[in-house]
Length: 193
Image (cartoon, rainbow, N blue to C red):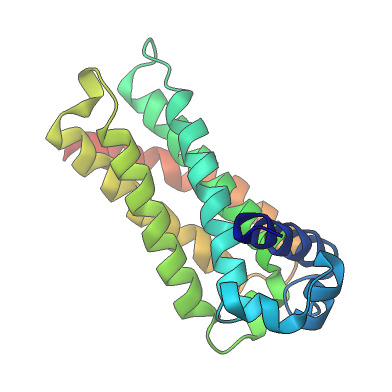
């Protein structure tokens, strides 16, 4: 089998297992079995199970950021546009935590905070860099500073939900609260920068 096909089969197997059973409950042996390859073959392409997860997440984030940027609605005013963009980014963060990583990993793993911090920094860079490549009025330097400010503040708040919430319903309530009570003030602050 070609290297690209092997890598893709590993990622597809891992994605399915992580979504069904969670990151912690999925072993490298199970990924190898589902991908129909030897366990040692996985380590030719990925250094660890965490590397597989990181690759999956970065693939997902890159696709999602492209969709976020492509959904640029030029007739929206600045405040509405930023509000919509940040909520989409927050939903992306939630999906990452909920579907790929699992809240148990986030709450119980000793290195989850570092993992999420690095991941959110990469997501921020992807979003701001993708936004900077857009043509049009929103490309100017001050706007990118506003976007970076909003993304930094929002990601700090959103990822804190994972560490402070007890249940999934608490997390959803926190998102609603963030959208209604915090985000409008962050957007207004960003606009005045």
